[in-house]
Length: 144
Image (cartoon, rainbow, N blue to C red; front, side, top):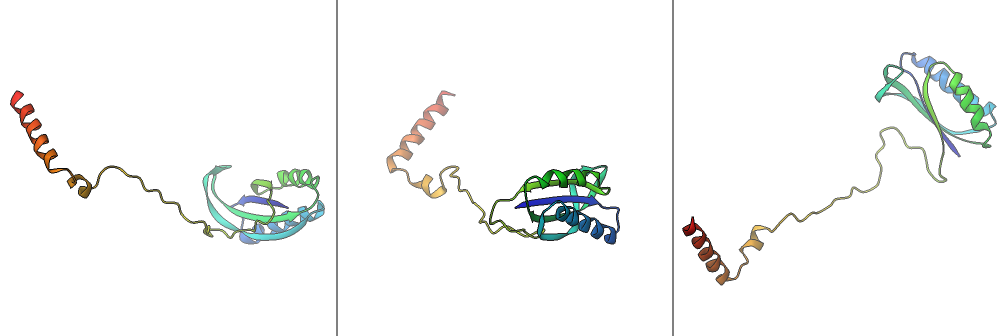
């Protein structure tokens, strides 16, 4: 199972973006693959510019097929106009396609760090310790 993520030029109208999506799907099928799931491209803001553009339509599709078809798909997508960037990865078994913006269900980890004694812990001194500390403090102050 493979996953193909791609960015399409944001300056294209929505009908042209859908045509590009269909072209990508047909490229996969013509190369001997089978499209399992496909997500319609959604307009996103890019973290960094690609080809001097700060936005793009991002789409993802899952497909399966023989390993040698990846070279054909890669070569064809490099030549297609309007595709800014794409990435094909091997997808681990059992992983499903997440929707854009969908939150992970993993719990957040919280860390507790002890930074010092609390006020209650500071008060827990032996009665003789306080008198001894005051005496030492007075001796130091007298020497100054």
